[in-house]
Image 1 (cartoon, one colour):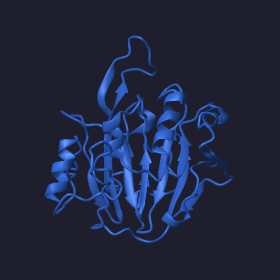
Image 2 (tube, rainbow, N blue to C red):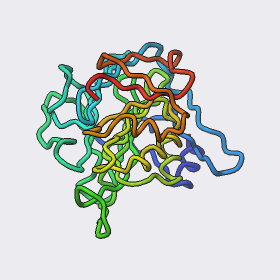
Image 3 (cartoon, rainbow, N blue to C red):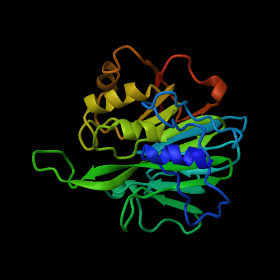
Image 4 (cartoon, rainbow, N blue to C red):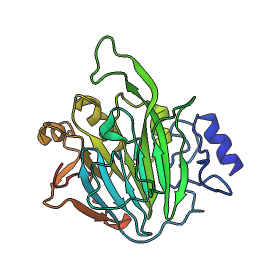
Length: 273
């Protein structure tokens, strides 16, 4: 583990401990790539956290909120403002502060873990904690100071987080309110994503060209669009260059395991998106 942390530090990746959660040692990641550009360095496959068998259920609640239910009965709500719950009571909520539809300063006190994607103090938010059967970590990104980009855009450092949930052998990522392209350090810190939740508004977050480029690079088995507004789904799909299948479903939920991931990368459109 000491050697692993040294390699991670050399490429700018850290896995600190959430101060609110008692830990004996830093939680290992099954999905994290140690390095993509350092010769002879292999991808991490740290088996000290055994993947539970079973299915993860993902429900589209609205806007950028997906509800993730794990085999170990952990319920997670992403970009949580309190407006979208799909009737579920989450144990964990993640938030981003681009605007108030992605966070709340007054979450239900019964929610055990409230993870902000920003830090009101100095430096980025850093989360790496195990809740039940799920490892949760984040990769900080920047946000704009206003609604849209333009010649006078001022970026606020580390105002957004890409949250990653590792459970049942799956690597699930939520891009949050992403405002800029990702660089190699971001991709290295993210690692493998089997499922990724992607905003496709094309304006308030990132352009459709920019978001589709990130989606193609991640090449997740399942892509779950969100934050769509009036963007035609066909506009996003067309930018996938035939590399992804499209699957439109009449229900708001899907259940998936490591064994049932589609063989070809697929954009799955759940009801309400």
